Amino acid sequence: MVRTWLFAVFAVLFAVSGGCSSGSGEAEFVELPEPAVVVTARESGETVPLRSGSCAKISLKENPSTGYLWSFRVVDDKGNDVENSCVELAGERFLPPDREVVGAPGIREAMVRGLRPGRGIVLGECMRPWERDKKPPIVTVRYFFEVSR
Image (cartoon, rainbow, N blue to C red; front, side, top):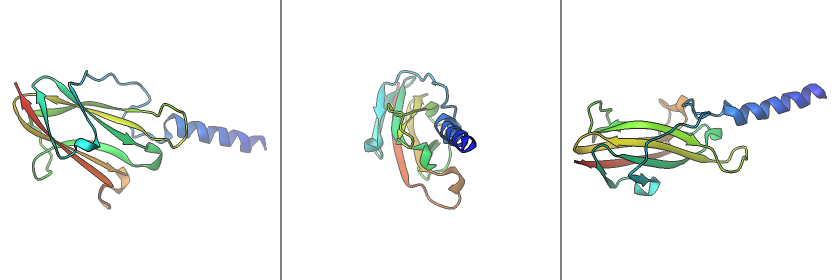
């Protein structure tokens, strides 16, 4: 009886403390730059103005307990990864829900920094990492950043 109770307690603690994390260090609060603009899923597909040197914050719901996690990439018009873009991913973090309810969704925040004038695309995909080559993402967002001086 005591062993069963202890096992249940450890299982709950494991799930709440990071057993369902995306592996991106969300156990610690990650300090991100102050954003000039915040975009959500509603702005997907739109052009977002951004000044060189400033940041935009992408803010999307995420529920790590389901296994579905957001990942972000800088891409070209065809969805291929780009290394020398006018934008870069400047950091990300997961904010857990206000209420400590197992299975409740939190918020994934990703910062995009404008580097130089031009047009950069950030693609976000919500998927289970272990299904990457087997299934398409359940949700995809795409932001077109127009960077000016």
